[in-house]
Image 1 (cartoon, rainbow, N blue to C red):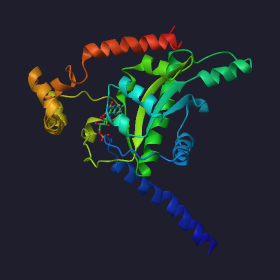
Image 2 (image 1 turned 120 degrees about the vertical axis):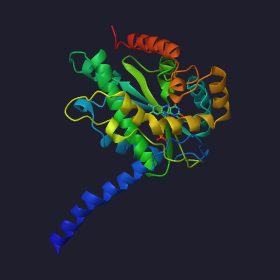
Image 3 (image 1 turned 135 degrees about the vertical axis):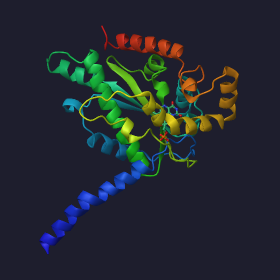
Image 4 (image 1 turned 60 degrees about the horizontal axis):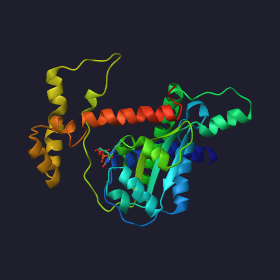
Length: 277
Ligand SMILES: Cc1cc2nc3c(=O)[nH]c(=O)nc-3n(C[C@H](O)[C@H](O)[C@H](O)COP(=O)(O)O)c2cc1C
């Protein structure tokens, strides 16, 4: 009786949660329309606790921090810094994930240990930890029926966000997520075919024919999607763009000149926070 029960429990542990996890991944969509319903504080803490406990952390030094923004005025300020993505105003919660050595370095100082992590390796280690916990938080909210969307604009306004959140030395934003109850049910977005990501033993260079094959579907679906948005279509036509690839690096999307400016700002922020000499 006891043995049967143990066997049943271990089968359950091994198989059923994996199925649930697969369902969470399969139901992922970035959400860009939200209800204004607030998120229970206990639920936020539960998701964050599980995400932190259930994610790997380099050296178990836990070199990250999460800044929650719920105050409407402060959210409006971040909305500006995130290039006025309007669903930031709808959703009740914004979380900025930071690469953070400040707490650890204060502890090292207190204990008379050598200082460290105010360097490029330190930045990368903390940034990886922050991204790992960010994705776990996303999964935790999604598993409970809430919606999320990452804000890549965190990188475009890095120093301004760091200043607004009053981040200390060796602490910088890595990414931000918008969280709330979804007010839309978008279709699942495809990724490139699996074969294009996987390399056996060593990197396999891609031929022109494989590029054609890899991007065929994406070019049709992506182009159709952008052209179905009246304002984007207008911009595409005015700029004379004729393909999805051209759109991606145009002034309307990921402009290389803007990226040069954002890169300079990131470098400055990293120097200012002593991740770079
Ligand atoms: C690091 C990162 C930054 C992103 N930044 C934005 C953003 O600023 N605005 C936005 O609407 N979506 C953003 N996204 C969401 C992507 O556009 C989205 O994940 C992608 O189009 C695939 O759609 P899906 O998440 O619904 O599968 C970001 C995603 C990631 C991973």
